[in-house]
Image 1 (cartoon, rainbow, N blue to C red):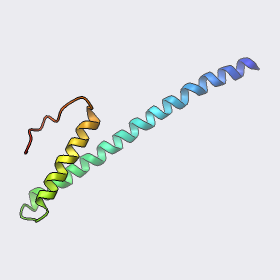
Image 2 (cartoon, rainbow, N blue to C red):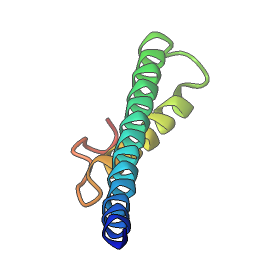
Image 3 (cartoon, rainbow, N blue to C red):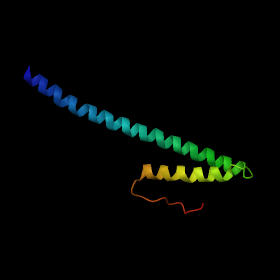
Length: 85
């Protein structure tokens, strides 16, 4: 009986860790997907409504969203997009 308990504890101890790692990865993917969709929507708005008073706000928001996306994808990397584009 002690062997069964030890085996259960050993197998149960690693499974939650693997599940939480998978859940964290899935959450990161969902976050990246949402950020990509936001960037696409902002780019569309900027292309179609260039004369909108909100244009500068969209441009700033796009820049911030892009920085966040890159920070999540590669925390040690740099945004390959030149400043001001």
